[in-house]
Length: 189
Image (cartoon, rainbow, N blue to C red; front, side, top):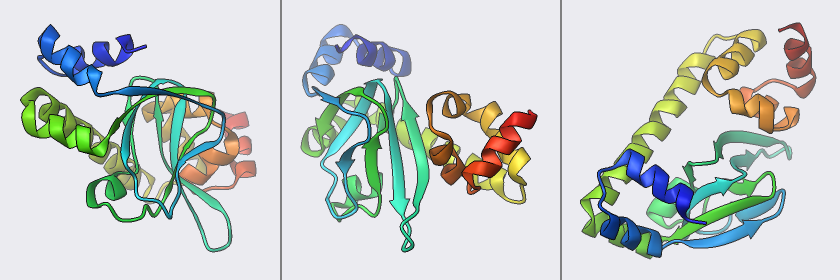
């Protein structure tokens, strides 16, 4: 159950076996169903998730009731409703597993205990934040001025798992185009 997390931790930081066991001991396992909501926009996020199997989506719901996907995390990655997790105010987004998933989670209290007591975990947290920022910036900058075809080509190049593992409706909302436009563009590529 914890082998994938251990592998990722070893790859991302210089950690000895005792420290690795200590870090992993703070994580618990949860099995979720397809489309299960982990955090609503009204809740305060208390957990940080690691995806062993499956996918987590962060999304908002517009005033007209449409989903707007903001982020997807797949196997061997971490995800949470970060602003809420950090500032302990209600999330302004939803956190959802979009397929049956096996997740490991750590509570906010335990997470920050590790950040404050283990330099290796603090380094990992910094890397997670930096990578998330880079992906978000690439998406923002990459999409500015792009037409639908260029957006799909960007996804193929930078986040190919999306087109293979996520519904057209969710990918389209992530790209800011309609599902029918996405289908049309994909059929021409």
